[in-house]
Image 1: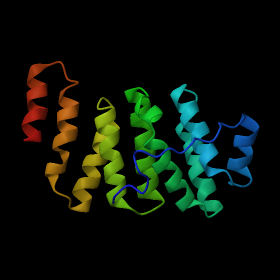
Image 2: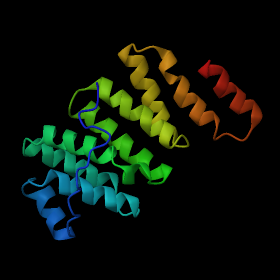
Image 3: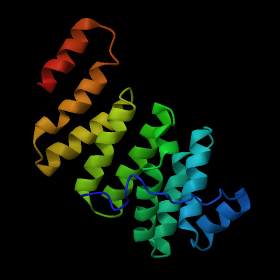
Image 4: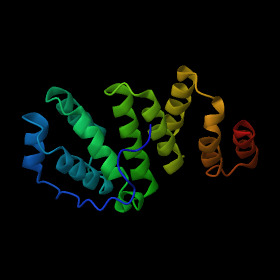
Amino acid sequence: MPSIVPKSSSRRPPAAMPQEGLDEQLNVRLEQVDAVVETLVLLLSKGEASSDLFHRLHQAAVRDGRLADLAFAYEQVTHERRVRALNAEVQGALFGTVAEFYDDLMGDRDSALNWAEKAVIAHPCVEPHFVRLERWIISAGAPVARLARPRIAVARTIEEASVRRGWLAQAL
């Protein structure tokens, strides 16, 4: 599925919100989807966001009928230069969260696969990202060759030559 946000978007990100505002948005009524996503990405970059916060956001989007708005906010924020500048661990966590959102709540396995692949490539050291991607590719009947790029990314992180060769052989 092609991205709905141009990569050269000049969108000005909304300001991060204080904790009270975040709690209200997640617990009472989700109205400022963009600002909540911005706040969670900021917290994630500081190591202060847990998967529970994103789960609460997803549940609030379901509760308040804001799934399309959340998908759009994720597309916008993940294409911004500042997100691409985040460290690999943060990018992998964010992209993995977006993959789960598309699979679990939007029922869009193709988009989920794209985001899961981005998560593995961004941070190949996280085994659950790769396992999930592999499972989704196999269950979707997608070509196993789609795992080549992620396998190469993982292989680059492996120091032991024989193990690295095994990953590379599977990529070919």
